[in-house]
Amino acid sequence: MANAPIPMIAGNWKMNLFHNDGHALANDIAEKMLGRVGPSVDVAICPPLTLTGSICAFLSATPLRVGAQDCSPLQTGAHTGDISAEMIANLGCACCIVGHSERRRDHGETNQVVHAKAESVQRTRMTAIICIGETEAERNAGKTLEVVTKQLQESVPEGSGSANAVIAYEPVWAIGTGRTPTNAEIAEVHQHIRDLLFEMFDYDGYAIRILYGGSVNEKNANEILRVPHVNGALVGGASLKADTFWQIIEAVPKPSEVSAPVRVKA
Ligand code: PEP
Image (tube, rainbow, N blue to C red; front, side, top):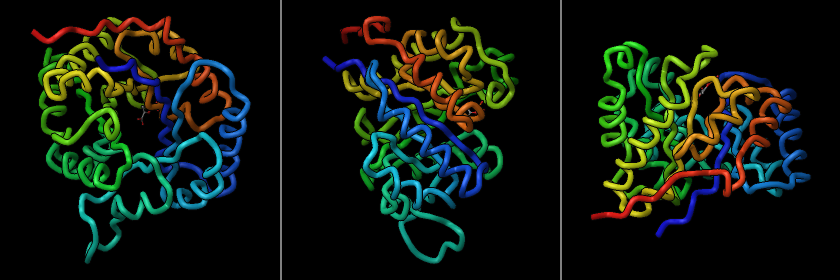
């Protein structure tokens, strides 16, 4: 039987912050974590790559983890401008986001590219945070579960498990818009993803974390983080201020407040 996953809160800074502000923000969050008492939670920040090396270095003795926002699917060679997962791991990163909808939109990344990137992250022993989620048109057409199923099945490598993969369900229309699905809509998709993970990875599928992402803030985190099978959040805008990010971390429920019944395989 799988253990209940330890929740994860990951901050995606996107293409924001220069050296001084980025270092100050990382430092503020790390300080708050060192003094924290409460339910256990894994916290990661994903700064732009310009800051990743220096932030990894000064956070190395703290519980705050550092991740990257993307990587090349390739390992080495003549690929100007690209950065491999090995290079990112070498900086000291613990995780790397792949398949964010902004990468899928801006760089035409397909599920197959995302799959290759996730595999390259996992080869380095980092955790791949694999993003999936429907557009507004797909939701309005009643295709959410169909879209999410295809993205999950095609993007998540066979060798995935709770030790090297986290799924982030991010409805594209909720990212950066201030709009979120209802709790019932989030619950429906997270239950569906959980069922698929169970089919794909047996009981370890229950230990793979499923994060919700899309306009999570200090006001709605409390409710969203209590939806069954929501094991944390991927946070964009609200991760750029230590206070709001911290309030989201503090909203993580105690294990006794979480209801996510485990099914038994027939
Ligand atoms: C994101 O970029 O993954 C995200 C969820 O952004 P925001 O929280 O700003 O909607």
